Length: 140
Image 1 (cartoon, one colour):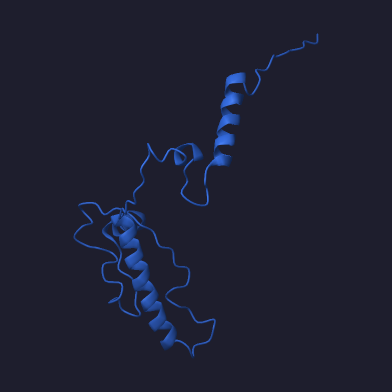
Image 2 (image 1 turned 90 degrees about the vertical axis):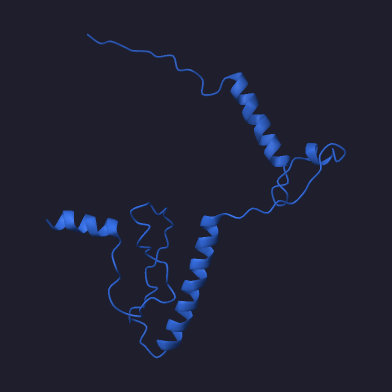
């Protein structure tokens, strides 16, 4: 015995969703995307809308920028020292990834990267308390 199963699929877009998507697409084409990011409907109403510049500072981004400057300074010093080294010699900057992570209360006493500029030029890096706990668990 052969059975056939038929399903009636719902359309991907209903009329309301389609109209909303078209309106959003039209809005996005009219916005000043390379400049202020505002729509002409707002810009044409200078009697109602007043504009001012607001400068905000993110402490996490400021910390990241400072850290990158310190690393760049250290890398410049390393490049001067290692300019006569062969290209295949490892450098401290090889494979570097910079990750920003919040420091919890248990990590607050041991900042991992507080003194990058004063870091020793060679030798193993110190493990964070969390990394040391992971190593202990893995090792037995």
